[in-house]
Image (cartoon, rainbow, N blue to C red; front, side, top):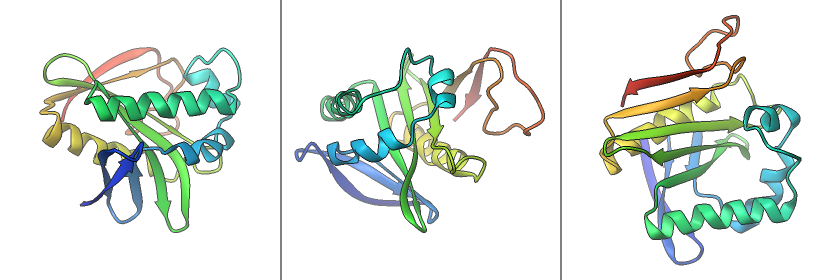
Length: 167
């Protein structure tokens, strides 16, 4: 795992980009909004319980909220996931600080990019950040019924659960 140079968030805030040589995590910038919106589909809306399809202004507002959290060192850390070959936005991963040593991990992968290992790689990078930069000792992953875990085989259905793991 390699920690890259920091990327500029909102032209003022420095936030880490990270890579494992296959994927790169970097905070979303406003000019990433069209690509983020293009990666939305019905499956994502169902898993994240979105009331309607997003519009460009919704995505820009989300990115601004993420940038504010980075700038204010708030509880949210969100990165876009880019594949390096080719250089394309394939999804997103985020951490939310919970209790003093606990974070919540969530992720999404765009249609056409799923089941290629991007979420697992992104989660590993984000959790290393949580351990080293947020002093996290455990992670909570909440899954809705029917959503597959990063570490579970395709064939095993899940019910709703809350899982804690050591970081």
